[in-house]
Image 1 (tube, rainbow, N blue to C red):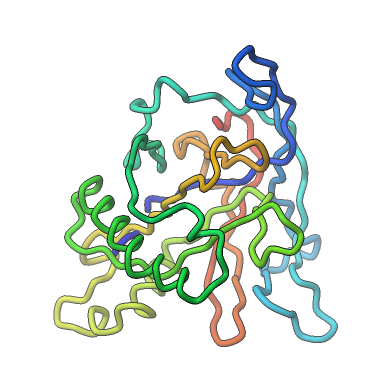
Image 2: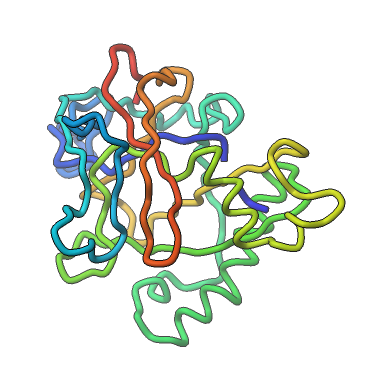
Length: 248
């Protein structure tokens, strides 16, 4: 099953760009961007977020954000210094795909099927090669667009998509036979990783770029489990509070 060491990620709001002779739109070197960090519920209650419409009288989420100007470091030219096992992210280059980019921008049912039948196997092979995993299961995909009419917009809060608890839930949800076998696929029995594979569909990206934190720079005390409430089940993501020394 495809799955990551915890990664801390966000899509940045409009950064303070540094002009460069190669492009007036793409900064080079470190830039300053405003990131939205976790601010806990004032009541001390467990934080939650409703994925769809909340019940009458309840807010979409019971926690708020606090904005911090943050230095975002440019890793171009030193991508090989970052690794999944150490930093919880890796930057890969020149990975070919036979799936045309316009396929991902289409809402046509045939395009959706093409992604699953052609792109999923490419990602599976990539993960098997990069991680040495024995098995990869891709359980969903998302195309994010900076368009008010899009179904999935960029997420501008610092967050972690899964926790250790929800990773185990994902195994039970998507591989129930493995969870109930004599040698169940569970984190306590063998390693399970949830890995997000992000690919720019219209490079170069000039709005809402994806930012990652180096995992060792984010203390456990900055991470708060958030109930991710679906209509039929409750999962868990994590919000991240600002702390001194985070490296982005």
